[in-house]
Length: 162
Image (spheres, rainbow, N blue to C red):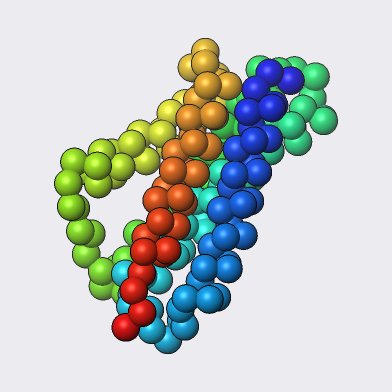
């Protein structure tokens, strides 16, 4: 299957990030010390990294049952689109629940807020078969989820104990 080596590598990076996260959090922080913003960051780190992991494996899982490459990639895009939408929704829910207002600290934060919903829409449009570059879109979606997870991981390792 095309892109399988790249997707396997991305899955390994996601798994490594999750493992490192557990070690860093366990060694550096007690959850009682976390403010609501840190809880949301941690949730985003874990959910997006898991989405990258599962999303990178979806085409191979669907290919087991289907010889139709077009159907495999459409289903993989649908899967990552659903997971990405669930992540995005859960972060918004947590922000409302904890009464945390978004802090846009620059162009990067604004761009991240635009790219996430745009990718969700593109994954669903791809799942319907209206976008010809299904493989590339899935890889971009996995990379975007991994980027969010790693960005939040870097925030975690830079925390100072109170």
